[in-house]
Image 1 (spheres, rainbow, N blue to C red):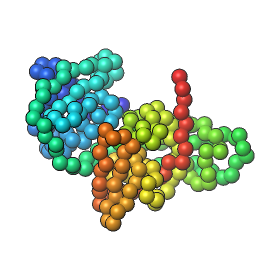
Image 2 (cartoon, one colour):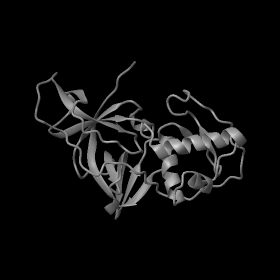
Image 3 (cartoon, helix red, strand yellow):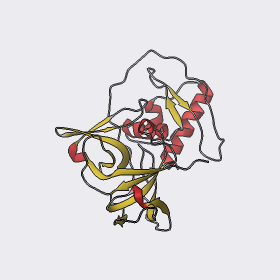
Image 4 (cartoon, rainbow, N blue to C red):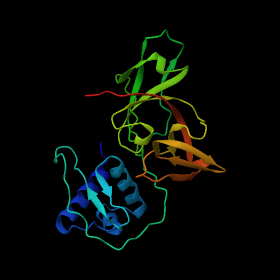
Length: 244
């Protein structure tokens, strides 16, 4: 599911690529979406990229490729390949994506269970492994989970959308099982809340007063924040995958 601004940006970029084969500038995108700063465009592009709608071509300034359009507008929409531009390596800037995860999600407290038993966990929407989570509090959405996958504690389930954690074996469409906690060791895969706005699934690294949120996909960059900007919302304890 795309936000309204993500959809507007995707269609604007697709239109410009179709007309000229060249991606619009960040200023042009900002003006087209009536945003006040280019940082908002950075956030929208990252969200679209991690959801598989666009791709940034490496070592080229302003080089975007539209991979697909929203549902109902065609399964895929390859745009003309952007014209080559001089190689420019942009400086790293942490990109924060607005979301809605400012309150802890309720879960299910697990006690020791007999082997082979299953448990119903609340299933709270999709976490895009790098884009906002729309936290759903509708208890009619449940995931049936083997009790053996869970230890004691408060748990909930999330659906994964995106590919930023594929090298850790977490794929698009997987259901991940999260144990609620507010601390985690270095190297732990966690649900982290950034700036009280964005929830993301990443590997946690601490160094001094900074926290790095590390993807498990070389196509995405590690993002670094002050420790006061990141709150651990839970750690990954299990995964369920269905084959079709």
